Image 1 (cartoon, helix red, strand yellow):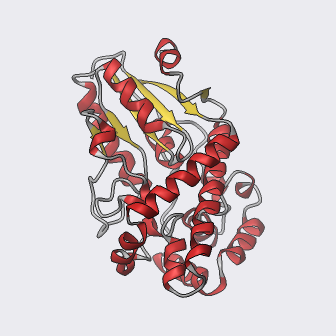
Image 2 (spheres, one colour):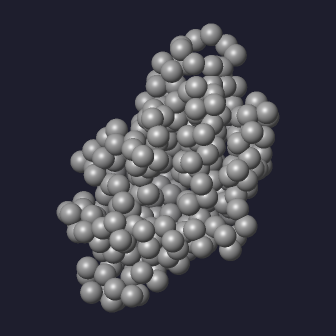
Length: 297
């Protein structure tokens, strides 16, 4: 791969306007968009993931959209390997590639590499997941605080996958999960430009509420019903599907489901913003700052 090459990262919370901006940037830069979204890569998940439509992609090639099946699990490690292979291929013909999404872990994996975490007995994860179902996530959060007070200061404790992953390593190795965290980022044969998008909070939350209304009108409940057999898949233990599954289970009525969908989506956006702000190496822009982003390259 000839250098210099640049990976332009456009990150940010749900509904902030990443898709529209990336399409504009891709057309100006004559390049492709690579998705870093842990759910949009599954072909069976569309409405609940706010996957960009063909019309929204507007002729721009998007990668890791509908690229895998819900019948498999794409871990951050697998995504890192497959995405890097794709980037090397794309960089052979393009000087700039756009990587975009709201899954901070996937972006970090591509840009900086994943931690070298030792393997632990899979039975530990199975036991922890069973406990989440019977005891709730809060009990595991409390245990993680005891085992690894360092990690909990920066972790998204509302993310079941991350809580379970950290706790299984603590229990399986007898060492804090944070002790295995990477101290030096992996070296990549391309320049990385990290950009993040934000809007005024009230504006962002209003967009999230409108998006949820649109998802419901487009058939979110019906999509979730088809996906019920896969409800234990990591990609479906997330905001946008869990609330609908609770409605199916009779835990609350339709109006309460809508309330929870909107509230939890707003909370998720707040956690995403917290994640990216903690990285400290992002340059922040408004969604309409496309020209400024290009000039910053």
